[in-house]
Image (cartoon, rainbow, N blue to C red; front, side, top):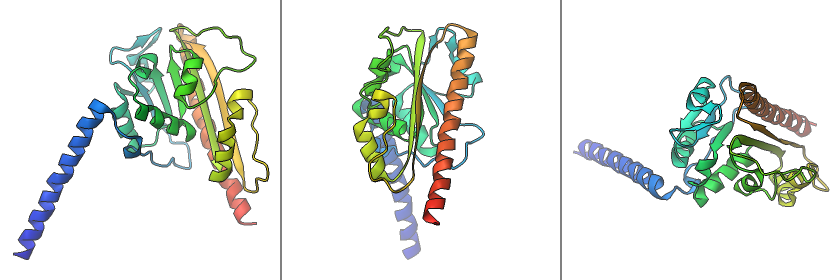
Length: 246
């Protein structure tokens, strides 16, 4: 009798669990999903053979010469909404996200907070067809445009790619992020009195989507940026081992 009751309870709990998951899925697709419910797993120490690069945008996507077929050929995972992308990223850490400008209009505040958290983790972000001044607040930045850069609005066939990786003591990182000086001046300022290792890297590229050469350059830049992020993570881990072993 006890065993049968135990099995029934477990079975009931199973149905309850499924019901909760289905409910979260429906609510998430309709009303957005709190960022806390879609955490991102930690990145591996070494660059994976096939980095996880995702695209979010309309299913009928085509911008310049960049099409769904091109994205598939480059091994990019395709998503038509933010919640499906966030759920997929729970099981495998993202390395890069290509965002069509139209998808920015679908973002809820929780989606924006989620994307900003991924950006701070070192995920490389590419936004298509939106001026970089509009992209900056989406990433939680005051500015992306270089102070010396001419203010020429970007068109629908252009993109901006940005990334930043920071590895170190959380206290030091919080101080650096609070200043935001890197994206304002392109100079990195380490906190005064810092005793532990702090490694930092970041960059921005802009380009067009109207030629085969430009498309090849986009994916080359994206993969090189992802590789650079992993190299900085590895350098920090080596420096930390040396620091802790002294």
